[in-house]
Image 1: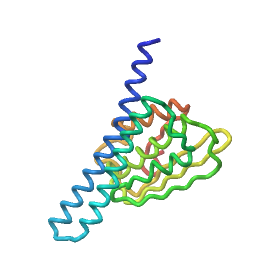
Image 2: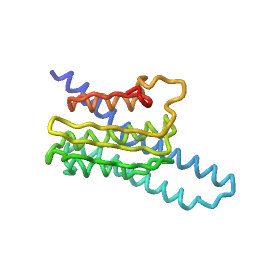
Image 3: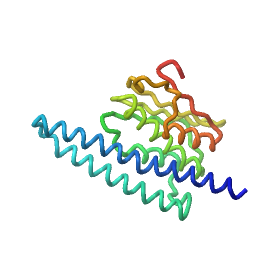
Image 4: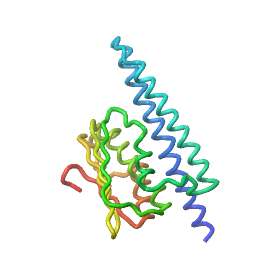
Length: 193
């Protein structure tokens, strides 16, 4: 049905804009805040922070170009699932140390997975840092014959005064992406998952 195709495409565009641009701008905001704090305190770490600003700007620009390219030729990147996940975590998560463990063997050719999974991983990490104020985030990705499991753990405190199940745009996008791959998203604090 044509209307369903239009609605699905609009939802995909909204996810892409959120994942590629809004996250980049949020990271830039964190960096600028940190730079202002350091400059106000007379700290001399501004050069390092400005270097991080440049990295985030470059990454956000590349993400915008990817989103535009995907509109013209979906799946044109040609990365494996592993490469795509690793590339998604190259952008610094401001204020957090990251670790990535990949177990098992990803499917050799899975363009939908290579496109969607990295965006889910990056959104989960961004949410942990932004809303949970995490300082360290562990990403574990396990591939098995019957599917995969992604676990993102952090040392953050979770969103203040919010239920973990409350869905912002990022969580909505994660659920849509994972749902299209045949999976589900479970959120929780500590042992709530």
